[in-house]
Image 1 (cartoon, helix red, strand yellow):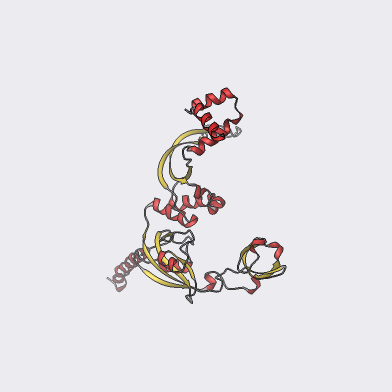
Image 2 (image 1 turned 90 degrees about the vertical axis):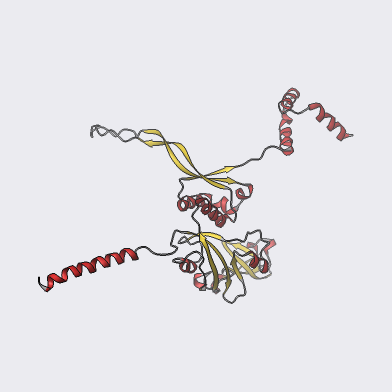
Length: 325
C-alpha cells in the first residue's frame, strides 16, 4: 500500500468529523427569533433623569406614573418582530430564561438624534385654542409635536421626539419562554392594545367552497368551462375573542383591527380570528327603551305589547298618576 493510499482513509475520517461539527453548529442554543418570551424591564435615559418605560409597578409608583390607567407587569414579546429595541433583542437572543442584563441603546437607534430643523414656527391659527400653551402636544399638518414657545399669533413647535438625542439604558430579566398559544395571543393583545381581552382557541368544522378539478378527458379544443365549486367540510383553528366595550372603543383596535388580526394569525398559527360582541340582558334601562319604542302604537297595540312583556298596565298607570299628583 502506498503512502497516498494510506492517507485516503484519514482524509475521509476528517471530512466526516467536519460534517459532524457543521451539523452540531447548525443548531443554535438559547432563545431565537420567533420565540415568545416574557420580559421584565426598566429603561431610563442614560443620564438617569427620565423614565422611558417599565414593567415594574414599584418603579412606576416611585416615578409617579402609576395613575395613568396602564397596568405595569411583565410583557410578552416575539423575538425578531421589532417589539422592543433591536439592541435589547440582540442581547436576549441566545440567552436562557432567568438571564438578566443591561443594554445601552444609542440615541440614533432609540428615538433618533435631535434635529434643529424639526423645530418650526407656525401660525397659532393651526392650533386648537385649548392647546395654545408651552408644552402642549399638538398635531400640525399631520405631524406630531409639542409647543416650545408661543407669542402672539406665532408658535414654535418642536417636531422631534421628546426623547430625541437621548441614549437609553435598559435593565432586563428574562422570566421565561411562553409556549401556551392562548397566553401568547393574550400577551400580543396586551402589547398592541394595552389590555388583555378574554380569548380561547377552538377547532371548528366549517363548510367551504372549493374549486373542482377539471376533467382531464375534455377535448383541448373545447372552450374553457366555467369553474365549478363544491362544498367541503374543513377544520379551521379559530381564535375567539370577546369584544368588551373598552376594547371596541380602543383607538388602536378601531384603526388597525385588520392588521392586528393578521399579525395574530401569522404569529400564533391559527386559521382565523372571530371577534364576538357581548350584549348584556335588559335591565330597567332596557324597559325604558322598550316603552319609548311603544310611543307610536295604538292603545290596543300597547296593551298587547305589555301583556307580551308580562307588564301590568294598570300598575304603570297608577304610578304615573301618583307622580303627577
